Length: 191
View (tube, rainbow, N blue to C red):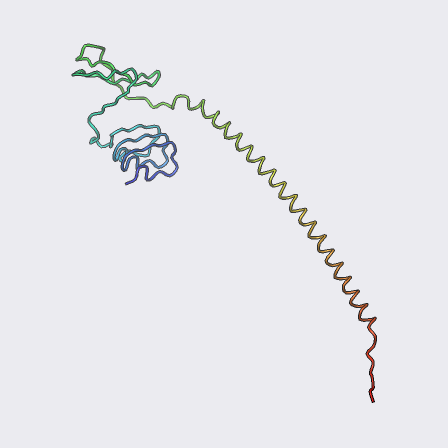
């Protein structure tokens, strides 16, 4: 099975893994990582699924390196990954059994729009509008050139046709004059 196989109108989707994101048809801005990830989820948007096949049989452990401000502790320490809702950074806190921090209060994440996206769209649109306006101006200029060349060709064709008709008339006159000026045939009698 191919990743994003049924995607028809969705955009800005990323899928890595055999069969990942098969149910995304019109959804946008999704990220799926892992074999068959998102195959049991309905068509969705703005979702990240990593190792989640949506049926309870997904990955039971997840190890992520490079989390913001994470020094990757070594040894038997338990580290809880946290999400700072103010700036969307993943971070870490020592688990309650380690005595290094407060227990993390878990709650369901709230659906939010992508930060900065509304501010970026007008800039992107302005750039595209400028390109479209340039293309429209080029098309209008080329259309004008085509109309001018067509008019010139039509005028030249009319001139050529008139000259050809005049030459045909002159040839006919000369032919008629030659026919008139021919001496009448004479009969010669040889005894």
